[in-house]
Length: 382
Image (cartoon, rainbow, N blue to C red):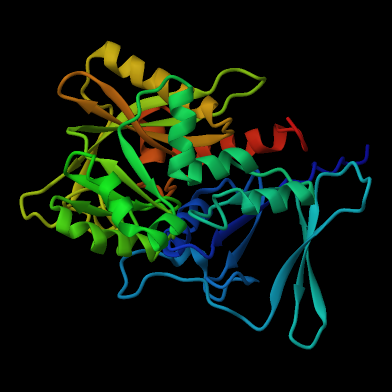
């Protein structure tokens, strides 16, 4: 009897880098995923996106990226550019082809792609723009779709969606580019209605980029200028005195409700006053700056309520696959949602994988589950 060839493994395109200020975080995320993905189950191809938007084959092994060196990791430009070509019109196959185009005009076929794992944080990767490209190409991908990605990237519209879903949202003020350039005095007057301290943030950025804690009104203009380096749209949030509690959410199969992980709590060590909040260095480069306690020590009914609200927030954004919801639990017993990340940090030591590990799904299993959910998702409107 002739041997039957085993079925071909799905080919996963891991995209990383990107044009946002979180470029280096994405590189380190890719290192973690590429080092842990189940290569017995999947063929894997990694493509980097430079800070100017060029898609390229990696110059260095992306699995070597980390925050331990003297320079932050980056995707380096090359003379050849990688292009994604969707399948033939009317084809029932949900796949696309990768083509490397060289400087002399020649090209090299890099094979097909069945599913994309977009490990991109921030604008032009996590904000619906890349997701739209993949929808046009007919390719399934890990994570939220176009609209939910865009809403979750913009803190202003995200808060509106949460409030509409009945979640408790803290006071905030949004300052658009037009409002700031035409009448900064009026914008500052609106901000002064909030109680100090306030946090001034780019509306569409993550990884604590461009965020300033303001305790004196005289600091506001400098804080807004810092946020506007990352985004012309700025959001100012009233500080909330509470514990920072996080919950991972993972989609489910067969139309079932999304799953919520055990809760994690961020504890920032402020003995040296080096970190006034959970900033970029506390997250990625200063291992002694903060701890993650998981499961968080909370009354059972509070833990259950936060986990419930994390799923409500996931559904309010119409998210898919993956999200991390961040909450405050105040001294008066209030639960206030801060934000949701639709592509949270995903290194082996990041909070999202750590919470799921404590819940019973290890890092490699989590990657497999996310890819499996993406492959099962129908194309087009859903």
